[in-house]
Image 1: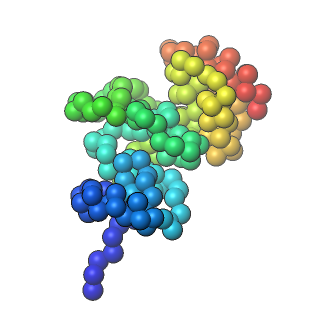
Image 2 (image 1 turned 90 degrees about the vertical axis):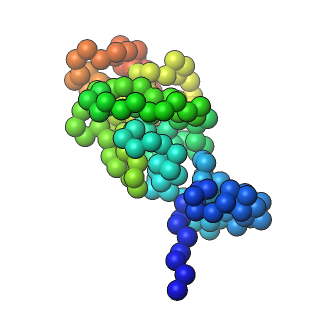
Amino acid sequence: MQDRLPAVLAAPDLPLAELCAARLDGELVALDECFCPVDSVLGAGERAEALARSVPPRLIAERDSAAWVWGALERPPAIHRLCVDAGARVHPPPRSRLAVREVLLAEGDTASLRGLTVTTPLRTATDIVRFESRFGVREARTVSALLRMTGAAADDCARAIAARSHLPHKRRALGRLRSLGL
């Protein structure tokens, strides 16, 4: 009996030329740097698995990368935003599609999906309102979608931010949350 192919395919599973040919033939669809059968239902698990295949272990998907994994963004970002817990002492190799920063994470700030650690929707929303240099319609929609996933409102997110001391960009984040009007 032949083994089934994984739901998320990458170059280690089949040669890249075959994967690209199957995509051109309409048998596979691209999912970030991986591929999935065209009839697959793509959800957070599949997106997490696709990203996990190109991310070194112990790195955590955050901000727009986490928003894409959770389904709040339709397309993966051009550069994946990742973080590492300050206590982890990880030194990832430099890669052109990965931007990594060191952060302090609280218990409950992350979840594990198919081999990828990702910030929770609430933590992702708080990071987006705190750190995005531009907060336009796209970012507001992303934060709104993330909050809807958790059943939270902008006030819940604001309370989570206000509860932390010495948090960078706290004032900017609280102003952005007020502007959402959720």
